[in-house]
Length: 212
Ligand code: SF4
Picture 1 (spheres, rainbow, N blue to C red):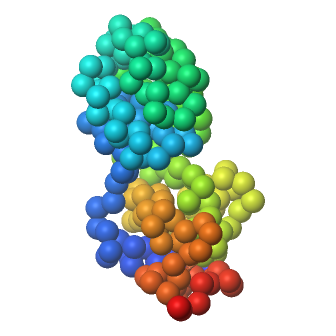
Picture 2 (picture 1 turned 30 degrees about the vertical axis):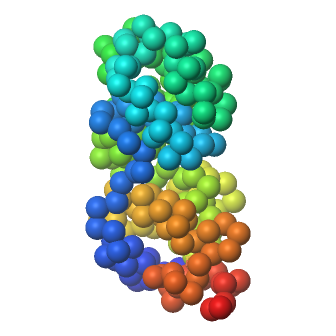
């Protein structure tokens, strides 16, 4: 896909959704970090349901530590992998209190050093809580980037680098939200909704779904 097409693609996604953001509900960087850790292999909807109650009692690392691992589990039992997520969250909160004054750090290395926080989670927090132009490549972005030809790559890291290189600067900060939402609701994994897709004429995918 050439530069001109990439620009037009994002202009269309922006026109459809001028202020995109995550579908996770949060009020602070800490709540976002917790929600993103909980969202691994879970739906945003399921996470929001659990965090609505959890954040009412524990919206800081200190309160999360006071709640304790078992107390936390009681709130997140409906979310997949809740045992390991609870353990990671408690360890992460202990580090936030001991090393970062109870705040979520703004540096990638410090974020990635937290239990349960990988490159993708760090990218989401840096972008969504702190406004950095990072690209958190999840399964949706990986698929959309490859199908459209926007930033083809064999691994999430290769796609991340391709996007950072090729997405026009003015779209960089919001690009990952647009691509996630496009993958989640239009460019579906099994049967992409190509006949209704607003970027179909710009997309390089060869096996587009034909009109019904
Ligand atoms: S045309 Fe189809 S494959 Fe291409 S982005 Fe749209 S939904 Fe995805």
